[in-house]
Length: 400
Image 1 (tube, one colour):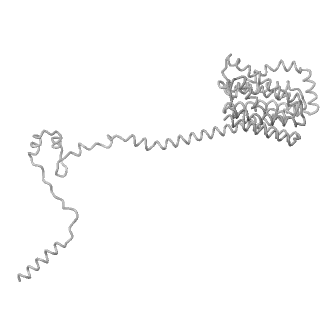
Image 2 (cartoon, rainbow, N blue to C red):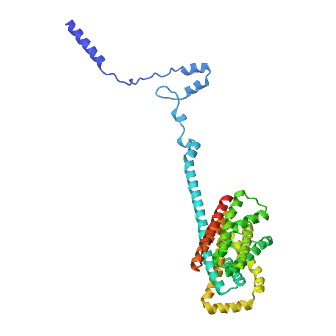
Image 3 (cartoon, rainbow, N blue to C red):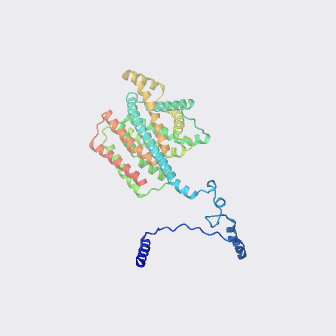
């Protein structure tokens, strides 16, 4: 019996030891601090411990009062550094997109200006040549071009389409030499086109970069690198080759084309400085008005009303009423293409303007006039034009 009881006790004990124990300890009831605990802490002289005694309960410890030490959510201070870091990349992306859009819009605007300028110039040269073939009086046609442009701008100012510029006496004084150069260039170019083919006049005018460098060197004292001077060699050589092989070569037309080229170089150099105060559109409007009044007495002295009347009757009898529309188109498109060219000059540098003027504008005019007026072109003549245009490209690269 005794053995059986001991065996049962042993089995029971062993069975209890083999039972799995819980991993977490059982919750224990911690004793409270004695009532004289605060007095003992005060004897130590530690203020921090004295503060602990004033707080209330924490599961038996009475360590601090949650209601006093916990701050409300509204009183929390936000982390401004985190907020700045969080939103700064978004602001950078937005600014970058806006800047890219502005650059793209500016490029599109300049591209439209240049395309419109070239198209209007082609139309003007076609009608200008038609009028001069039937009515060979370049002094009067030049005066009509300037007068029509002046009337168009006065109407634009009166109807508030364009805001009138605010000018003074000093502005008109500085504009006078530019107007003289513009008047000489217009009359010389018109005389040249009345003597030779339109394409030949623009071939001669392709040498504009060479004259621009020479004028800037000797009159303005500007120095250029050696590459710029070397780029002038193919320009001068190409123009000379094209002129020497021109079938309809005329000495007067060639000299007038060179004079107009030189006059327009002076005009473009000084125009860029003067248009800053009024803008490209209004600057050309004022330039046209002053050139118109400068040209009137010279046109009357060189040709006169009697010659104009006889020539007008002859042209109308040969062409018919369409001749009047040719004159209207000639004068209107002259003002429009020059106005857009000054708008382009106001947006870009003189170098970019020169590239667009010499390379693309003159190529378009030469090709269009050759096709429309069926001007015969020799292979050597075309080679000279290509060499001059290539020299202009080298010139533009050397000045960058």
